Length: 530
Image (cartoon, rainbow, N blue to C red):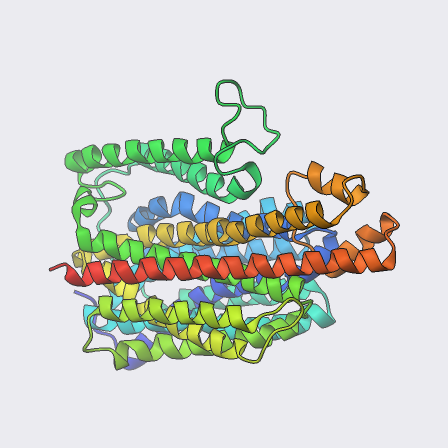
């Protein structure tokens, strides 16, 4: 049974856990809001920033299953504090980054490792320190801390990035990690856990490689091709015509099938597998995980495509983008906090279904609010709808999952939930943003083929390019000036690019609507379960 704490003690534990979640969300928000500045500073493009954004979910999805059990050995509190300290190191690595590759392959992996430790520990500490009737409310508060980061960070760090430089944004995130590490050390009591009989090292290795293959394949599919090979990778016959992304995904699925088989046998023998064998046949748990996955596909896709379009497509500053994101964040905070109270008498699955419906409404409103070069005031209503929908889902999906297993097993779901969360974020970037990128490239190639001379330099460059980057008007203007394009033709090509960027964004929103429908159907199936 959880220990009975005084109101003051419970408050301090809650604040420390919310701050830990805040740090991760603040780090992600800072990277997002710094997109335009990083592109200009390192002479990069959105494709490079997409790779930076995918490193975190790649690391997380690969290691979360293992960390979900590791906390039982070293202690959840100790693992949380370790993750926060790694977050400090990751922030320092970004502040002194000499190149975009340093951020991609050094700083972001450190933040990924921080998330691997922090997220499962937060879930386990909530379940271990508080009674079940408080879980939905606490998960709502933790989700609200994500919204609070989305509200504060774009404004605060957006101002610092615009006035001081992109480094300043990551200084604030480093300070947040330090403060949270201190509060976690002082305010959170350790949990007494019984370590499993034996650590499943083989299962951890198989899941690591399998998840890396799946996530890498998903993330590279827009560049490597979905079915056919569009890359320059040396693939031997007879697979040379097949997309490397498809090979990676298929290999990953095969490894995860071996992982499931191994877990069943290991759990039967030692009762200490990374995933207990009864979870594979628990329909409510599996449907709850599907809801969580779908929610984070929507969240990940929206987070990446919205900021990219506002800053790159519409040329808004970090601070201007932050004001729009603030509307979403305030709505998310409010919804996360009040949903467990307002809908207390309703089934979690019913509230989840409503949440996905509100997200679909938000996507539709965003489509009608955004043009080629401007946006309408109704985008703020769209952000309110997205915030309400995702806020409703934040508390309900986690509650569905933890209620579907025993209390002892619920602590261990943190790693699996965090894995699903990161897979969803990666799928959001790969599928939602990737579909938009495909639509944009298709449109540009079609328009250039129809309206540009076949012998021109532009036609040659478009035909020979494996992919067409998502770039700002300034970058395209400099490129066209280098080709000595006359003013009238230059503006014509700029308009083609701007229209294609809008098609990119709207296509992504249609995909979000589709996933919203999947979430609604899944919620209704869950409601039908006894």
